[in-house]
Amino acid sequence: MNVVWSYLVALAMLLGSTEALAEVPASTSKEIGHLLSYLSSSGCKFYRNGTWHDSEAARAHLEKKYKYLLKKDMVKTAEDFIRLGATESSVSHESYRVRCGEQEQPSQAWLTAELLRYRQAESYEAP
Image 1 (cartoon, rainbow, N blue to C red):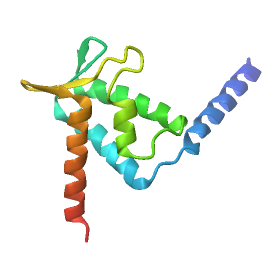
Image 2 (tube, helix red, strand yellow):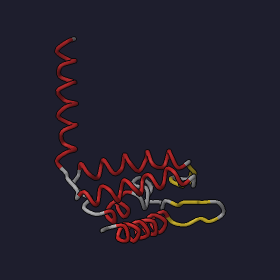
Image 3 (tube, one colour):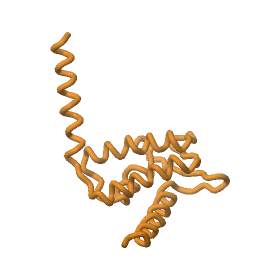
Image 4 (cartoon, one colour):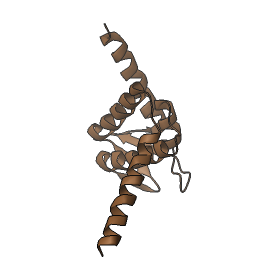
């Protein structure tokens, strides 16, 4: 049993280390982190695969997709993350949607608008 446990620990360490292979610029990580935080704190509903989810569940789902995209070295910009991970279901190809109050829109438009707002605010704060 100890041999199996040792093998599993070694495998977990190896798999965990592959995540570090795909590096994104610090500014990209910061922007994507902001988008995920913005989503989770928005209180908005997130539609995927026929069901509306709360903002925390939406964040958790998009974080999983982000980690997968990082492992595949597919994200270099926040726009890559939005386009490849936060626009549609990779299973059904149905577009994700965000509903805040009575206003509903595609998640791509919602996240892109926030990204642009964030970048503008960051440029004003820079020395």
